[in-house]
Length: 117
Length: 113
Image 1 (cartoon, rainbow over the protein chains, first blue to last red):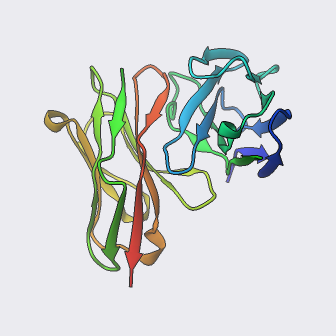
Image 2 (cartoon, rainbow over the protein chains, first blue to last red):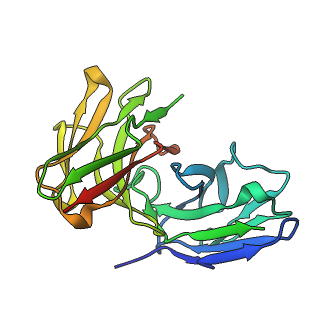
C-alpha cells in the first residue's frame, strides 16, 4: 500500500537552531499539506501545495518557517530559528488533484516529532 | 469560516459497549465531513467520509457516522468497542472545491476491560 514518507521521525534541537523536515507524498498526488499538531490538540494546517504552487500558507509563521516543493513532488519544511513553542508533531499529508476522485481525502505520513530544548 | 467542535476531550467505555463520539461543525454550505483516527505517535488514518447522498456512512473497522444537517452534526458510532479501538479520534471538515481541511481538537477514547 502506498505511503507518505516523512523524515526524520524524531528531532531534538536547541532553540535558535535550524531544523528541516522532508516529505515524499504518494506518487501522483498533486496536493501536499504540512500540518502542525501540538500535544493534545488537533492538526493545524501550515501550508498547502498544489503541484509546486502554494495554495494556502495563511497560518505559516513566515518569519521563521519556510516550505518548498520545487518540482511538485517531495517537499521540505524548514524552521529557522527554532523556538521552544515549536515543539510539536509535524505531519505531512497528500491527496489527489482537486476535481478528481479522492480529492480532499488526506493520506498522512507518520509524522516528525520535534522537541526544542 | 469553517470550524469543528468535539465537545468531549476524552471518553471511557467498556469493551463490548457501544460508542458515540460527537462532532459539530460550522460552515455556510454542505461541507465534506471526515473522521480520522490516530494511534499514539502515529499519523492520522481515514475512518470514513461524507460528501453527499445517504446521510449514514459506513467506514472501516465497523464504524459509521450520520450527517444531520439540521443539527450541523456528524457523530461517529460503533455498536461494540474493541480494546484496539483505544486511540484519538478527529472530526474534520473541508470546504467543497479542494480547500483546506480543518480538524477538531480530538476525543481520546479509553477502553476498559
